[in-house]
Amino acid sequence: MKSNYKKLGDYIQLVDERNNDLAIDNLLGVSIQKKFISSIANVTETDMSVYRIVKKDQFAFSPVTSRNGDKFTIALLKEVNSAIISPAYQVFEIVDKKLLLPEYLFIYLNRTEFDRYTRFHSWGSARETFVWDDICSIEMPIPDIEIQRNVVAIYNELFRNQKSYEGSLDDLQLICENYIENLLKTNNLKILGNYIQQSEHVNYGLPLSKVRGVSIHKILIKPKANMTNVELSGYKLLKKDQFVFNPNTARMGEKIPVALNTEEDYIVSKIYPVFEITRKDELLPEFLYLWFNRPDFDRYARFHSWGSARETFNWEDMCLVRLPIPDIKIQKSIVAIHHVLQSRKN
Figure 1 (cartoon, rainbow, N blue to C red):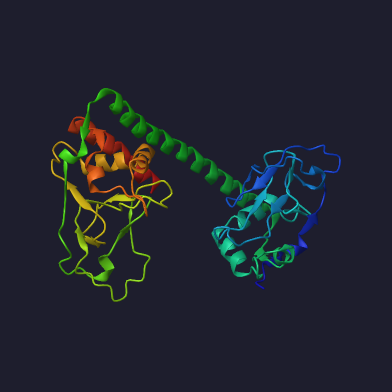
Figure 2: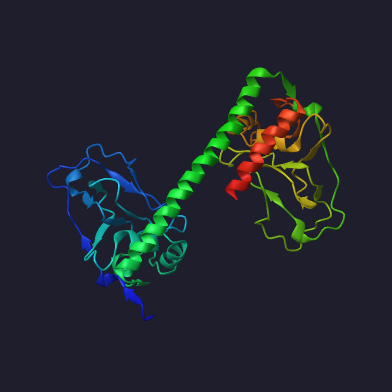
Protein backbone atom coordinates (compact mmCIF):
# COMPACT_ATOMS: atom_id res chain seq x y z
CA MET A 1 0.00 0.00 0.00
CA LYS A 2 1.31 3.48 -0.83
CA SER A 3 2.20 5.57 2.21
CA ASN A 4 -0.70 8.00 1.79
CA TYR A 5 -3.22 5.32 0.80
CA LYS A 6 -5.70 4.06 3.38
CA LYS A 7 -8.24 1.24 3.40
CA LEU A 8 -11.68 2.69 2.84
CA GLY A 9 -13.20 0.15 5.24
CA ASP A 10 -11.61 1.98 8.18
CA TYR A 11 -13.65 5.10 7.38
CA ILE A 12 -17.12 3.80 6.46
CA GLN A 13 -19.87 1.67 7.95
CA LEU A 14 -23.00 -0.05 6.66
CA VAL A 15 -26.41 1.41 7.49
CA ASP A 16 -29.53 -0.75 7.44
CA GLU A 17 -32.49 1.39 8.48
CA ARG A 18 -35.85 0.21 7.14
CA ASN A 19 -39.03 2.12 6.40
CA ASN A 20 -40.91 0.23 9.13
CA ASP A 21 -43.50 2.89 9.87
CA LEU A 22 -43.96 3.83 6.19
CA ALA A 23 -43.11 7.42 7.09
CA ILE A 24 -41.14 7.99 3.86
CA ASP A 25 -42.73 7.66 0.43
CA ASN A 26 -40.03 9.29 -1.72
CA LEU A 27 -38.83 6.24 -3.69
CA LEU A 28 -35.56 6.66 -5.57
CA GLY A 29 -33.29 4.50 -7.68
CA VAL A 30 -29.60 4.78 -8.51
CA SER A 31 -28.37 5.16 -12.10
CA ILE A 32 -25.09 4.16 -13.74
CA GLN A 33 -24.48 7.93 -14.06
CA LYS A 34 -24.01 7.80 -10.28
CA LYS A 35 -27.12 9.83 -9.54
CA PHE A 36 -30.29 9.25 -7.54
CA ILE A 37 -33.27 9.16 -9.88
CA SER A 38 -37.01 8.81 -9.52
CA SER A 39 -37.83 5.13 -9.46
CA ILE A 40 -39.72 3.70 -12.43
CA ALA A 41 -40.52 0.42 -10.68
CA ASN A 42 -44.13 -0.67 -10.28
CA VAL A 43 -44.54 -0.92 -6.50
CA THR A 44 -48.26 -1.57 -6.44
CA GLU A 45 -49.00 -3.98 -3.60
CA THR A 46 -45.31 -3.96 -2.63
CA ASP A 47 -44.39 -4.03 1.04
CA MET A 48 -42.61 -0.67 1.37
CA SER A 49 -41.72 -1.33 5.00
CA VAL A 50 -38.75 -3.47 3.93
CA TYR A 51 -37.31 -0.71 1.75
CA ARG A 52 -34.08 0.83 2.99
CA ILE A 53 -33.85 4.45 4.12
CA VAL A 54 -31.02 6.55 2.75
CA LYS A 55 -30.29 9.94 4.29
CA LYS A 56 -28.41 13.03 3.20
CA ASP A 57 -24.63 12.45 2.91
CA GLN A 58 -25.11 8.69 2.80
CA PHE A 59 -24.15 6.49 -0.14
CA ALA A 60 -26.21 3.80 -1.85
CA PHE A 61 -24.88 1.23 -4.28
CA SER A 62 -25.90 -1.85 -6.21
CA PRO A 63 -23.50 -4.79 -5.81
CA VAL A 64 -24.38 -6.17 -9.27
CA THR A 65 -21.90 -5.05 -11.96
CA SER A 66 -22.83 -7.31 -14.89
CA ARG A 67 -24.90 -5.76 -17.72
CA ASN A 68 -24.21 -2.33 -16.30
CA GLY A 69 -22.36 -0.72 -19.19
CA ASP A 70 -19.04 -1.26 -17.38
CA LYS A 71 -20.20 1.19 -14.70
CA PHE A 72 -20.54 0.75 -10.96
CA THR A 73 -23.90 1.95 -9.67
CA ILE A 74 -23.33 4.21 -6.69
CA ALA A 75 -24.53 7.67 -5.63
CA LEU A 76 -24.29 10.18 -2.79
CA LEU A 77 -27.57 11.67 -1.59
CA LYS A 78 -27.41 15.48 -1.48
CA GLU A 79 -30.69 16.70 -2.95
CA VAL A 80 -33.09 15.68 -0.16
CA ASN A 81 -32.84 14.84 3.52
CA SER A 82 -34.12 11.28 3.18
CA ALA A 83 -35.62 8.79 0.73
CA ILE A 84 -36.27 5.08 0.38
CA ILE A 85 -34.58 2.70 -2.01
CA SER A 86 -34.94 -0.94 -2.98
CA PRO A 87 -33.60 -3.45 -0.43
CA ALA A 88 -31.41 -4.72 -3.28
CA TYR A 89 -29.24 -1.64 -2.71
CA GLN A 90 -26.89 -1.25 0.23
CA VAL A 91 -26.38 1.96 2.16
CA PHE A 92 -23.26 3.17 3.94
CA GLU A 93 -21.97 6.33 5.55
CA ILE A 94 -18.70 7.86 6.61
CA VAL A 95 -17.93 7.25 10.28
CA ASP A 96 -16.08 10.52 10.96
CA LYS A 97 -16.52 13.43 8.55
CA LYS A 98 -13.59 15.19 10.19
CA LEU A 99 -11.35 12.57 8.58
CA LEU A 100 -13.11 11.96 5.27
CA LEU A 101 -15.58 14.20 3.46
CA PRO A 102 -18.50 12.49 1.67
CA GLU A 103 -18.02 14.79 -1.32
CA TYR A 104 -14.32 13.93 -1.56
CA LEU A 105 -15.08 10.21 -1.48
CA PHE A 106 -17.73 10.66 -4.16
CA ILE A 107 -15.24 12.42 -6.44
CA TYR A 108 -12.98 9.39 -6.09
CA LEU A 109 -15.81 6.93 -6.76
CA ASN A 110 -17.01 8.96 -9.72
CA ARG A 111 -13.80 8.37 -11.67
CA THR A 112 -13.75 6.20 -14.79
CA GLU A 113 -10.73 4.46 -13.33
CA PHE A 114 -12.86 3.39 -10.35
CA ASP A 115 -15.43 1.84 -12.71
CA ARG A 116 -12.65 -0.17 -14.35
CA TYR A 117 -11.38 -1.23 -10.93
CA THR A 118 -14.79 -2.51 -9.82
CA ARG A 119 -15.36 -4.44 -13.05
CA PHE A 120 -11.92 -6.05 -12.79
CA HIS A 121 -12.52 -7.08 -9.18
CA SER A 122 -16.10 -8.24 -9.66
CA TRP A 123 -16.76 -11.92 -9.27
CA GLY A 124 -19.54 -14.49 -9.57
CA SER A 125 -20.99 -17.13 -11.89
CA ALA A 126 -24.64 -16.37 -12.68
CA ARG A 127 -23.92 -12.65 -12.24
CA GLU A 128 -20.87 -10.67 -11.23
CA THR A 129 -20.90 -8.53 -8.10
CA PHE A 130 -18.76 -6.04 -6.21
CA VAL A 131 -19.97 -6.36 -2.63
CA TRP A 132 -19.53 -4.52 0.66
CA ASP A 133 -16.31 -6.35 1.57
CA ASP A 134 -14.85 -5.38 -1.80
CA ILE A 135 -15.65 -1.72 -1.12
CA CYS A 136 -14.01 -1.93 2.28
CA SER A 137 -10.86 -3.33 0.65
CA ILE A 138 -10.45 -0.31 -1.62
CA GLU A 139 -7.18 1.54 -1.02
CA MET A 140 -7.33 5.23 -1.79
CA PRO A 141 -5.48 8.47 -0.93
CA ILE A 142 -7.05 10.24 2.04
CA PRO A 143 -5.16 13.51 2.59
CA ASP A 144 -5.61 16.09 5.33
CA ILE A 145 -9.21 17.33 5.64
CA GLU A 146 -8.27 20.83 4.47
CA ILE A 147 -6.81 19.43 1.27
CA GLN A 148 -10.01 17.45 0.79
CA ARG A 149 -12.07 20.64 1.19
CA ASN A 150 -9.93 22.40 -1.42
CA VAL A 151 -10.32 19.51 -3.86
CA VAL A 152 -14.10 19.51 -3.37
CA ALA A 153 -14.30 23.30 -3.82
CA ILE A 154 -12.31 23.16 -7.07
CA TYR A 155 -14.34 20.21 -8.35
CA ASN A 156 -17.66 21.93 -7.59
CA GLU A 157 -16.54 25.13 -9.33
CA LEU A 158 -15.41 23.20 -12.41
CA PHE A 159 -18.70 21.31 -12.41
CA ARG A 160 -20.67 24.57 -12.13
CA ASN A 161 -18.70 26.08 -15.03
CA GLN A 162 -19.27 22.97 -17.09
CA LYS A 163 -23.04 23.10 -16.52
CA SER A 164 -23.09 26.78 -17.44
CA TYR A 165 -21.15 26.04 -20.62
CA GLU A 166 -23.45 23.15 -21.48
CA GLY A 167 -26.35 25.57 -21.14
CA SER A 168 -24.84 27.79 -23.83
CA LEU A 169 -24.46 24.72 -26.05
CA ASP A 170 -28.13 23.94 -25.58
CA ASP A 171 -28.96 27.47 -26.69
CA LEU A 172 -26.94 27.07 -29.89
CA GLN A 173 -28.54 23.70 -30.54
CA LEU A 174 -31.97 25.25 -30.11
CA ILE A 175 -31.10 28.02 -32.57
CA CYS A 176 -30.11 25.48 -35.23
CA GLU A 177 -33.21 23.36 -34.69
CA ASN A 178 -35.61 26.31 -34.64
CA TYR A 179 -34.02 27.77 -37.77
CA ILE A 180 -34.68 24.57 -39.69
CA GLU A 181 -38.17 24.20 -38.23
CA ASN A 182 -39.00 27.72 -39.40
CA LEU A 183 -37.75 26.84 -42.87
CA LEU A 184 -40.34 24.08 -43.01
CA LYS A 185 -43.03 26.69 -42.53
CA THR A 186 -41.73 29.35 -44.90
CA ASN A 187 -40.14 27.46 -47.81
CA ASN A 188 -41.45 25.18 -50.50
CA LEU A 189 -40.17 21.63 -50.08
CA LYS A 190 -37.87 20.33 -52.79
CA ILE A 191 -37.30 16.72 -53.87
CA LEU A 192 -33.81 15.65 -52.81
CA GLY A 193 -33.38 13.39 -55.84
CA ASN A 194 -33.07 16.48 -58.06
CA TYR A 195 -29.91 17.50 -56.20
CA ILE A 196 -28.01 14.24 -55.67
CA GLN A 197 -26.55 11.37 -57.66
CA GLN A 198 -25.09 7.98 -56.77
CA SER A 199 -21.38 7.35 -56.98
CA GLU A 200 -20.28 3.89 -58.09
CA HIS A 201 -16.50 4.34 -58.00
CA VAL A 202 -14.81 1.27 -56.56
CA ASN A 203 -11.64 0.90 -54.52
CA TYR A 204 -8.56 1.83 -56.55
CA GLY A 205 -6.07 0.28 -54.11
CA LEU A 206 -6.76 1.81 -50.71
CA PRO A 207 -5.58 -0.46 -47.86
CA LEU A 208 -7.57 -2.11 -45.06
CA SER A 209 -6.86 0.84 -42.76
CA LYS A 210 -9.09 3.02 -44.97
CA VAL A 211 -12.21 0.86 -44.56
CA ARG A 212 -15.05 2.61 -42.76
CA GLY A 213 -18.55 1.78 -41.63
CA VAL A 214 -21.38 4.14 -40.72
CA SER A 215 -22.97 4.25 -37.28
CA ILE A 216 -26.40 5.24 -36.00
CA HIS A 217 -24.67 8.33 -34.57
CA LYS A 218 -24.23 9.43 -38.19
CA ILE A 219 -20.45 9.28 -38.21
CA LEU A 220 -17.90 7.12 -40.00
CA ILE A 221 -16.36 4.42 -37.84
CA LYS A 222 -13.72 1.74 -38.19
CA PRO A 223 -15.33 -1.65 -38.88
CA LYS A 224 -15.97 -3.95 -35.94
CA ALA A 225 -16.09 -7.11 -38.06
CA ASN A 226 -13.03 -9.25 -38.67
CA MET A 227 -11.69 -7.98 -42.01
CA THR A 228 -8.89 -10.53 -42.35
CA ASN A 229 -8.62 -11.85 -45.93
CA VAL A 230 -11.56 -9.69 -47.05
CA GLU A 231 -11.35 -8.78 -50.74
CA LEU A 232 -11.41 -4.97 -50.89
CA SER A 233 -11.43 -4.52 -54.66
CA GLY A 234 -15.25 -4.57 -54.71
CA TYR A 235 -15.59 -1.95 -51.97
CA LYS A 236 -16.95 1.47 -52.91
CA LEU A 237 -14.87 4.62 -52.85
CA LEU A 238 -16.11 7.37 -50.53
CA LYS A 239 -14.60 10.76 -51.31
CA LYS A 240 -14.65 13.98 -49.32
CA ASP A 241 -18.07 15.70 -49.26
CA GLN A 242 -19.82 12.49 -50.28
CA PHE A 243 -22.52 10.76 -48.23
CA VAL A 244 -22.90 7.11 -47.37
CA PHE A 245 -25.79 5.34 -45.68
CA ASN A 246 -26.85 1.89 -44.55
CA PRO A 247 -30.22 1.02 -46.14
CA ASN A 248 -31.02 -1.48 -43.38
CA THR A 249 -33.16 0.28 -40.76
CA ALA A 250 -34.26 -2.75 -38.73
CA ARG A 251 -32.63 -3.13 -35.30
CA MET A 252 -30.99 0.29 -35.60
CA GLY A 253 -32.52 1.94 -32.54
CA GLU A 254 -35.06 3.79 -34.70
CA LYS A 255 -32.23 5.60 -36.50
CA ILE A 256 -30.89 5.49 -40.04
CA PRO A 257 -27.09 5.31 -40.28
CA VAL A 258 -25.98 8.07 -42.67
CA ALA A 259 -22.75 10.07 -42.62
CA LEU A 260 -20.95 12.83 -44.50
CA ASN A 261 -17.26 12.30 -45.21
CA THR A 262 -15.40 15.51 -44.30
CA GLU A 263 -11.92 13.99 -44.36
CA GLU A 264 -9.88 11.95 -46.84
CA ASP A 265 -10.83 9.17 -49.25
CA TYR A 266 -12.16 6.00 -47.61
CA ILE A 267 -13.70 2.75 -48.81
CA VAL A 268 -17.03 1.35 -47.64
CA SER A 269 -19.02 -1.84 -48.10
CA LYS A 270 -20.55 -2.33 -51.54
CA ILE A 271 -23.98 -2.71 -49.92
CA TYR A 272 -23.88 0.95 -48.83
CA PRO A 273 -25.16 3.56 -51.30
CA VAL A 274 -22.70 6.41 -51.78
CA PHE A 275 -23.93 9.71 -53.19
CA GLU A 276 -22.94 13.32 -53.69
CA ILE A 277 -24.64 16.65 -54.27
CA THR A 278 -24.65 17.72 -57.90
CA ARG A 279 -25.73 21.33 -57.34
CA LYS A 280 -23.53 22.59 -54.50
CA ASP A 281 -24.29 26.17 -55.46
CA GLU A 282 -27.86 25.46 -54.35
CA LEU A 283 -27.43 22.84 -51.60
CA LEU A 284 -24.51 22.60 -49.18
CA PRO A 285 -23.41 19.10 -48.05
CA GLU A 286 -23.19 20.36 -44.46
CA PHE A 287 -26.75 21.70 -44.58
CA LEU A 288 -28.07 18.39 -45.91
CA TYR A 289 -26.15 16.60 -43.16
CA LEU A 290 -27.89 18.76 -40.54
CA TRP A 291 -31.20 17.73 -42.07
CA PHE A 292 -30.25 14.05 -41.79
CA ASN A 293 -29.34 14.58 -38.13
CA ARG A 294 -32.84 15.62 -37.13
CA PRO A 295 -34.91 13.08 -35.14
CA ASP A 296 -37.78 13.82 -37.53
CA PHE A 297 -35.71 12.46 -40.42
CA ASP A 298 -35.04 9.25 -38.50
CA ARG A 299 -38.77 8.89 -37.92
CA TYR A 300 -39.44 9.59 -41.59
CA ALA A 301 -36.92 6.95 -42.70
CA ARG A 302 -38.34 4.32 -40.35
CA PHE A 303 -41.92 5.06 -41.44
CA HIS A 304 -40.98 4.76 -45.12
CA SER A 305 -38.86 1.64 -44.67
CA TRP A 306 -40.23 -1.53 -46.18
CA GLY A 307 -39.45 -5.24 -46.55
CA SER A 308 -40.28 -8.65 -45.11
CA ALA A 309 -37.07 -10.34 -43.88
CA ARG A 310 -35.65 -6.92 -43.00
CA GLU A 311 -36.83 -3.37 -43.53
CA THR A 312 -34.83 -1.05 -45.75
CA PHE A 313 -34.71 2.58 -46.77
CA ASN A 314 -32.98 2.37 -50.14
CA TRP A 315 -31.62 4.78 -52.75
CA GLU A 316 -35.01 5.34 -54.38
CA ASP A 317 -36.51 6.20 -51.00
CA MET A 318 -33.70 8.65 -50.30
CA CYS A 319 -34.36 10.41 -53.61
CA LEU A 320 -38.00 10.94 -52.64
CA VAL A 321 -37.10 12.85 -49.46
CA ARG A 322 -38.55 16.36 -49.46
CA LEU A 323 -36.80 19.18 -47.61
CA PRO A 324 -36.57 22.98 -47.56
CA ILE A 325 -33.64 24.35 -49.54
CA PRO A 326 -33.30 28.05 -48.71
CA ASP A 327 -30.95 30.57 -50.25
CA ILE A 328 -27.33 29.43 -50.08
CA LYS A 329 -26.47 32.35 -47.77
CA ILE A 330 -29.03 31.16 -45.24
CA GLN A 331 -27.63 27.64 -45.46
CA LYS A 332 -24.13 28.96 -44.79
CA SER A 333 -25.40 30.87 -41.73
CA ILE A 334 -27.03 27.77 -40.26
CA VAL A 335 -23.94 25.67 -40.94
CA ALA A 336 -21.72 28.34 -39.35
CA ILE A 337 -23.79 28.26 -36.15
CA HIS A 338 -23.53 24.46 -36.15
CA HIS A 339 -19.73 24.64 -36.55
CA VAL A 340 -19.52 26.91 -33.51
CA LEU A 341 -21.66 24.44 -31.60
CA GLN A 342 -19.43 21.51 -32.56
CA SER A 343 -16.24 23.45 -31.74
CA ARG A 344 -17.55 24.26 -28.28
CA LYS A 345 -18.58 20.66 -27.72
CA ASN A 346 -15.11 19.47 -28.68
